[in-house]
Image (tube, rainbow over all chains, first blue to last red; front, side, top):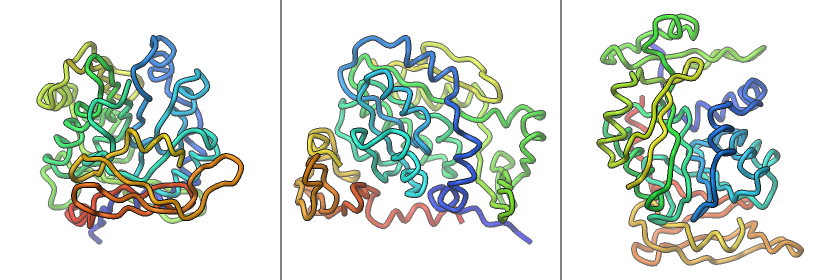
Length: 219
Length: 67
């Protein structure tokens, strides 16, 4: 049977509670970045904020946070985590509903790899650049599925009809159905090309666990 | 949704400003619970439900490309 990938919002709506239970802790590369940050010109915008675990770190540090996600059920979970002073809204990374230059910093953690069309991935990076105030920084990460061990561990398999870098990664919810998540294989070089192509400057890039991470700067 | 957010929100399509129309607010915090946001340029209306604005671009047709 050919699996059918769906809109990431629908995917994550269908697994939100179980997904949240496995994603309670913020990633240390995000925490370290937020903790080392000086005063900002605008809020920290978390694109694809999911259950709000990273937004919560920013809020605990006294920063103003804004979370955007396609999954309304993950946003409902995020609401419990970050409280009512932090604004959350349903939005698409490819067309952010945020004014130009309005963000002091942007997080786009584990989000770009869920966009199937090449043009959409470019749009998402251009949007990070557009909303960032000049001089602002962003952290962008993708799952390192180009590493065969990571791909094997994730049970990733090529999507039928894809170009080989279009993968399906099953989510097995305890007691629930298995849901395929769409994941694009993005190497560190491809990530850098995407970011530079979108007008961002790569300050530093590294691997953290099973993720490729880049710290970028808006000129 | 906090009212001050309007200053940095934009229409996802035109990136222009939005007008806020409040239908229900929290009497204590003033948080907007229900209402809508209208683009000052293209006129597209975005709903606010349970305090969360839905600011996806109209149609979001590209999502169907994922199938």
